[in-house]
Length: 162
Ligand SMILES: [Fe+2]
Image (cartoon, rainbow, N blue to C red; front, side, top):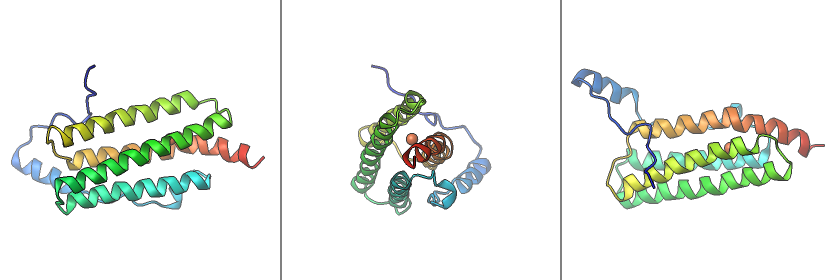
């Protein structure tokens, strides 16, 4: 089976000044949950807040240059909660017969594949979790919540309150 390619697998070749500027611009800031990320379904919003909290623990452990085992634990915790949460959303979508279920599930599976590849790269090949990877995770999560989950939220909140 081929390895899943990460979108950030190849570091760009940069001169020193550009590299320094790029590093400054990719500081690992936490992701902050706000009402604008609410999809209108309380139980899913609660999951998302927890998920963001776990992502921030991972960011914090890297920023603080914690032991590899601690970073690995944070990554593992994030990954297992993410798969639990995706199944939670998928169960709700199936229960209420959501038309875009498969497309949404495919998006989930895409991220799980990439996250598993990331854990493998970190745990067994000793690759670093770079600011670019963190940016990728943050932007994947916020885009997914604001796009795909928001659309599901409109559907679910309408059928659940019926
Ligand atoms: Fe989702």
